[in-house]
Length: 330
Ligand SMILES: Nc1ncnc2c1ncn2[C@@H]1O[C@H](COP(=O)(O)OP(=O)(O)OP(=O)(O)O)[C@@H](O)[C@H]1O
Ligand SMILES: [Mg+2]
Image 1 (cartoon, rainbow, N blue to C red):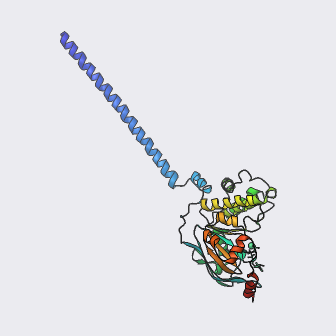
Image 2: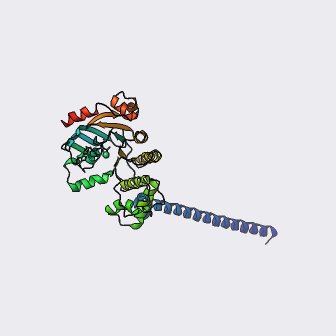
Image 3: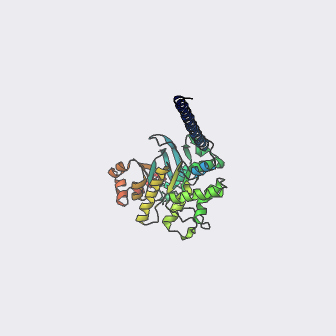
């Protein structure tokens, strides 16, 4: 073999080697890409499984998140009160017509004894009207059985004037009570939900405190947490700021406003407290001697020329009050 031939053979061998090297590196790259695609595919499958098959982790997340509700629309009636009368030994509610819209907070004002608590009790079926209908999402609750009304009270929660909390249970157990009543049995889920609710009413870390140790304001916060425990559609607050000083009253009002917006609640707040109304309400209803004396925005209320409303705002007694009450009673 000549020298030229040897060089040629060597070059050929070298070029063959480099082709083999190139092919090997291409094959490694190809495997790498296929592996990458496989990993991405696995990730996508995992995401789909987590999202749609709702494993335990997903359910737990729902326990502690605010409910997903339809956003409030301006004029979607949730509760419709039609021509309602209620008397005891005298007329308390007379021919009441009222619409409560989904997502709004209606502030209800009126002097003591004008039927504000009676109105709330009618709305959850704790009292039955003498006449008229009360429609919740189109269903007449005045004709419902007690069993059906229990279902209504899951949708429309009531924070009683006195709180109605159990003294013998600690704060956490008081809040867990409606969950257990609804059939929750998983202790871990109950614990998480109670923690979420304590946080929602700004009582983080108070779960194991004795209820009797709490201040009046904190007791009201517990009552609110308990009322929203089962994600009701609507919540009725009866005098949420009565019995607390103005500063606590203001912070309770702010809490109610925050919760109503965050949990997308429809709510009615009955109160004498004008500062509370100014913070929480979208709309004001004023009752007087069983009748609606005013219905409108806060601005319209404050600008009203009605002497009764002006006297109420000024904290004074209105002279015509007695004759009108007597007229209705008579
Ligand atoms: N179960 C009942 N039996 C008899 N009378 C009742 C009953 N519930 C309420 N009343 C009467 O109905 C009227 C209105 O009571 P209600 O409790 O609704 O007043 P209110 O506007 O909530 O007053 P306050 O601001 O003092 O809470 C009052 O005269 C009250 O005595
Ligand atoms: Mg009352």
